[in-house]
Amino acid sequence: MEPATFAPWLVMAGYAVLIWLMMPTRVSAVQFFNGEGKGGSEPGLLLLVASAAITWIFAKSISNAANLSADYGWIGGLGYAAYYLCFVVVGVTIYFIRSRGGWASLSSFLVAKYGVFCAKLFLAAIAIRLFNEIWSNTKVGGLYFGAEGSSGYWIAVGVITAFTVFYSWRGGLRSSLLTDGAQMVLAAVLLVLVLVTVGPGLVMKGFPEVSDSTMMAGSTFLCLALVQSLSYGFHDPVMTDRAFITNPSRMVKGFVLAGLVAGGFILLFSLVGLFSRSQGLEGPAVVAVPGAFGLPMLLVFNTIMLTSAGSTLDSTFASAAKLGARDWNNDYAVATEGHALRGRFLMVALALFGNLPLLSIHLGDNLGPAIIAATTISGTMVMGLAPIFLLSWISSAGSLSFHLAFWPGLVFGVLLTLQSVTGMTIISATFNVGIGKYADDLGVNLYGLAICTAGYLLGSVIPIIFPSPSDRGV
Image (cartoon, rainbow, N blue to C red; front, side, top):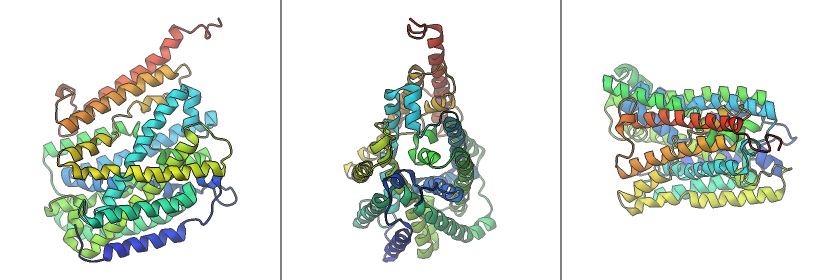
C-alpha cells in the first residue's frame, strides 16, 4: 500500500513527540535494568498492567488475530486470544519461584536448579526470540509507508528502529515502562475508533457464517494455543523480566490483569477480521479493512501498528541489554554504569542484526520466505519449558531432567520448521490431531509435550534409583 500523501509520516512524527514527552531524561544504572522510580520505588500496579499488556499487543499479534478471524470466523480470534493465558501461567509459576526461593531472575533460578550450562541453553533460546522480535515488528510497521522493498518501506524501518533505540539507550527498562503507559492508553483509544467504524457494518451483516470444517479447523488452532500457552510465555523475556520488578503479590495480580487486558484487546481487534470476511474483502484484513474506509482509517491502523511495534521493540532492547550484560554471566551485583554501557551497545548490535532477515526479499520468491521461516523460533521448539518450570518443585529434578525435556521439544520444532520450509512430509500425518493446516502442529505439540514431560519425570527418578557416590555419602 503506497499512500499518495505525507500523512503517515505526520502520524509517525506525532507518535515520536508523544514518546519524547514520556521518556525519562536521565536514569541510574539500577533504573536502567530494574525500571525503578527516582526514589527507588517499584512500579505501581497500573503501570505494571499497562506495560505488560501493551508489550504483548505487538504488531504481528494484531495482524494475526485479524487474519485468523477472517479465515476461521470468531473461533480464530478466540484461538489467538487464548495465547494470553500465558500471563496467568507465567505469573503464578514465577510467584512460587520467587516466594519460595527469593530468586531475582529466571536465569539465577535456572543456575541454582539445573546448572550453568542449562541456564545458558535457555538464554540462547530467548536470544533467538529477541532477534526475531526486531524484524517481525519493524516489517509490519514499515509496510504502512510503502510496499515491501520500496524506498518508503526501508526509510520507515530505519526510522522506527533508530528512534526506538534512541529512547531505549537513554532509559532502558525505565523508558520502556513509562512509554508503555502512554502507548497502552493510545492503543485503547484507537481500538475504540476502529470498533466504532467497523461495528455498524458488522452488526448489519451479522457474524459471518463458516462451514463445519472451517469451524473444526479453527477449533484445532484454539486447542494448539491452549497447549502452547503452558510453555510459550517462559521464552519471552519481555514478559518474564517484568515478573521481577515488583513484589511477588503485586506481580501476580498485575499479570492476571494484564492477561485480561491484552487478551481482551486482541479478541476485540479480531472483529476487524470478521468485518473483512463479512464484506468479502480480499487480502490481509489489516490492509483490506482500512483500504475499504479510506485514508483516515488507514492512519488509525498505521498508528496502532506504530504503537504496538514501538512498545514491543523498546522492551526487546531492554531485555537484550539485561540478558547480555547481567543474565549471561549470572551477574546480579548492584548494577553499575559499566553494566548499563554494555547493555546499550548490545541494543545497537541487536537493532542492526535484527533487521537483516528483511533483506531476504531480494533473494527470490522461494528462498526469501524460506529464510524468514527458518529464523522464526516456533512455540513448538520451546514446549519442553513447560515441565522445566511447572514441575520445578520436584526436588530430585536436576540437569538431567532439563535436558530430557528441552531437547525433544527443540527437535520436534526443528522438524516442523523444516517441513514448512521444504514442503516435504517429515512428520507422518498419522500424528495429526484435528483438521486443517494446524492439525500437524497440534498433534506434534500434544505428543511432544507428553514426551518432554515424561523425560523430565524420568530425569527426576533416575537420581533416586541410581544415586551418585556423593548422594550416598561416599
